[in-house]
Amino acid sequence: MTTTTVKTKSSMSALSLVYCGMFAALMMIGANITTFVPFLVVGGVPITLQTFFSILAGLILGSRLGAISMTVYMALGLVGAPVFTKFQGGFGYILSPTFGFVLSFILLAYVAGLIVERYGSLKSYIVAALVGMSINYLFGTNWMYFSYKFWAAAPDAFSYAVAWAWMVPPLPKDILLSVLAGIFSHRMYKVLKVRRSH
Image 1 (cartoon, rainbow, N blue to C red):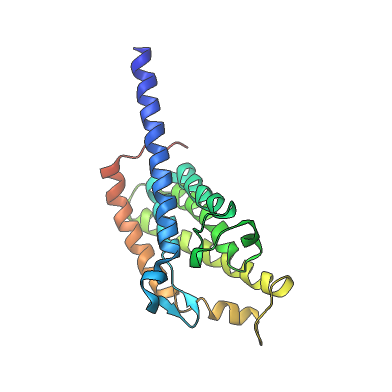
Image 2: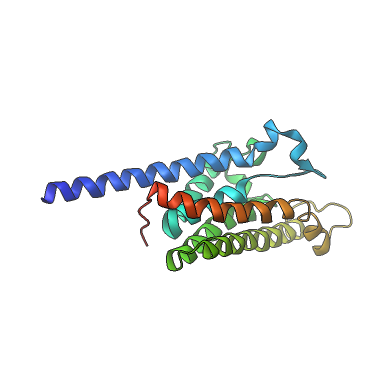
């Protein structure tokens, strides 16, 4: 009886690792989607699918595993794997103006996962997705602004308003994808039967 229990926990743990690795890989693809679809670069700003996949990670895997999968993605990039936007990687990426968005993926996955762990309705999934997207924008844009002001070479006439103006092109796409992520995750969680560990 004891042996059976240990095997079950072990297999679930292994499955959780697979899911975490899968979402880390999806993040790499989402970060570099413009390599395959160049027209998704608007005004020099790449329109990525990272926000979408990080929201999915939180909604499907839950707060803990979702945050772990995003941490794995960030760690891979910081040790040198070319998983960030434009196939960048390395510890120096911490100084990049866009590193705040990478950090925000961990927080948004955790918060979005936390919401759906407490409220399992379709509405809560959509709300959680939109909350996660808001965290991504608030954290990432503010990091970008302060990095340009304090250690990166700011473009001419750069201001806080300009930083937010840069976020306007991807906003409709991210709102739409967040809603779709909520709907999709609500269905997929029941199919995949992920064992969320709180």
